[in-house]
Amino acid sequence: MIKPKVLITKTIPKEVENYIAQHCDYKIRSFDGKIDKELLFNELQDTEGLLTSGTKINEELLSHAPKLKVVSNISVGYNNFDLGCMKARKVMGTNTPGVLDDTVADLVFALVLSAARRISELDAYVKKGKWRESDNENLFGVDVHHSTLGIIGMGRIGETIAKRARLGFDMEVLYYNRSMKPKIEKELGVEYSSLEDLLKKSDYIVVMTPLTKETEHIIDYKEFDLMKKSAIVINASRGKTINEEALIDALKNKRILAAGLDVYSVEPVNLDNPLLKMPNVVTIPHIGSATSKTRFDMSMLAAKNLIIALSGHTPPNLVPELK
Ligand code: DGY
Image 1: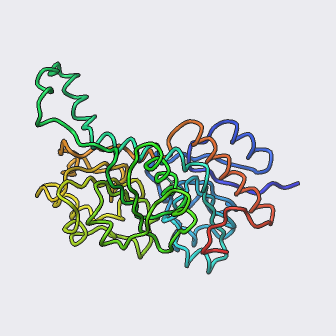
Image 2 (image 1 turned 90 degrees about the vertical axis):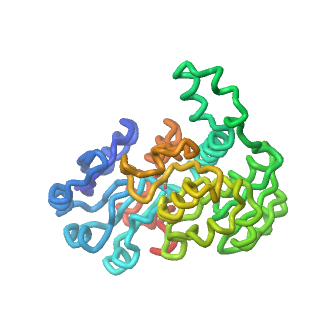
Image 3 (image 1 turned 180 degrees about the horizontal axis):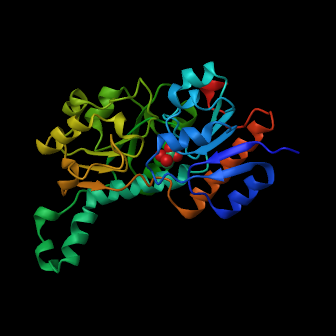
């Protein structure tokens, strides 16, 4: 039997590779985060299935991939898909929802706690032998428990964050979402809010919405102006949900207290980005889902989506816009 041709552009666990090998004729080309377009387009000529993460699937790429049937993302986000072009060319697109919710929610709390309790700043004091200087009220943090958390984007991950906030930290939780979630409100005691009220009332603002045309710069200058001066902003969604210039401006002018960032408008973040020089900004390199188990589960789920699609069936995680 002729196996379908698959191109893999991300390092995947051996076990997942072995599983793909049973069903597909595959090549792994690691582009180390930098895509060499010529090489990629060349490889794509006879590719039927692409297993990737973050590669821009647009008209230019699709025009070099005449046999492509499915792009399987090893991520829950799929803002790398140009959905219109994929639909027009009948290319399926899948993602990996569900398996990363707890891991990302944990990471969001790591950012909340690090920014609030100034963990990375104080870590540097200890390591530089400045223990005594750190016992200084200018370096005191702020409480997380019994404060108000505003979640923008109440999908699965938002819900998992809300659970931690309510049950673990006795926080009040407000959420803003396209649709209201009465079941979650009842189960967790969280409250739907307008975006404006959420921004005015929250001590911690977590952006967790997917990046779409509607959510790009959902937090901009006007939104920062509505926030408390003591607000801490956390972004673990996509960098462009926040206008980064406006964030820098708000931090510089002390219109908010601090930020915790896993994502940036350009990734890898430029070394001259002012955010990297600010002690009240905790920066990590887009690692929301990066635990060994979760990355394994995401790779395996993405491989299953790919193989089901290539066998002529509708994959379970076909993204809703392409159904
Ligand atoms: C996702 O799955 O979208 C996370 O951001 C990790 O890439």
